[in-house]
Image (cartoon, rainbow, N blue to C red; front, side, top):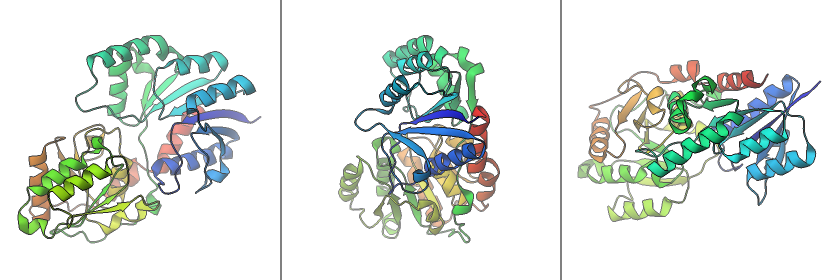
Length: 357
């Protein structure tokens, strides 16, 4: 008898942006099929790029994915063993409604970063109340890093510790080309990020503005990604006359095949759960300069496979950029081995599959 599960993902399917989660969805669906488990996927939209044509997808259309799923189960009364959520707010009435409509066990996967400095007092109180009211309807909370699990407990209550588990994100190692010879001075940098204020790229622009003129004349940083903050970043670059340093490359569906063209990745983010871009960069043997937020320090060891600074510390970012550019600081190890051993996509898929088999 075929077992049925539902996966609700507040994740838009975009052919121009194929990331690690897309590969995870495809491989997880394949693993389920191989084990006689049918998956109904609930996304905001339908797309046939990549392997999505092989998935059974229900689009929420104009509605949000949670409401769309509630209408679906009310109408169809499916016999789901598990309901799994990704990128969905935790501890809301949605989970109570799902539990009352189905007999399924509910697994909530938390990918959501927290703001630098934490939530306001009002929001912290609100989350504690939601935890008391609705956490009992969730059988398991999964964090994508130990940091995320700790934040779940901080948000909704330490009593949930027995219902939490860390499953790290993973990447497709064999699709990531390897950097063979890293430039130890005058390196070529990239950024791979959604362009929003919380990613801290404006801090990097400020940091570059303080570099000596001779470095600014040669420094090259390519920015991959798009988002609502792009115009503000362009304005700041123009304000400092740094157009020669920064180049916007837009979204690339094959970004995991591009990392190896660079020597270092820069990620001056203010908030993060567990970055797939960091994993892909390290898998390409490209060290990362990033901040001490979220789960970054769970994969980056300072001065071993990258460099970690305080978020928003522009002065420190200027100094580390200058030292790397001049060859005064360098990463010599091959950064791929850690990713292959601990953060591969097959391991991620297997760990998630173990929850529902």
